[in-house]
Image (tube, rainbow, N blue to C red; front, side):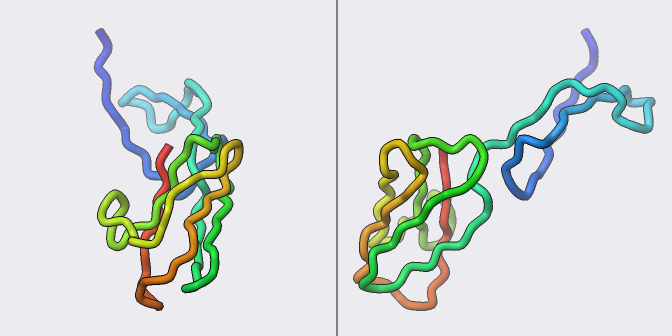
Length: 116
């Protein structure tokens, strides 16, 4: 069996424009294209919601569908959700309706988090 290794690559945004390449340890450059690599997800975005006004967001990105989940969290993704924020996607689209915030602290920064 050939020796193997795992390489973790950090990317700043989704794209279908990556190439997965291979090289021997003794080579100085990656010389064999193995496959195309698609990173699925929304493009980085901001969301501004105003107390008393309905809050909506349309996601743009790669490989998005109506099964995605978009949440607003107080500190970190997966932590405490914002008390006013619903997380319903509108069927057949990547539009999200968070309802109308009627409580909350103006100026507080929340985390907008996506999950497939």
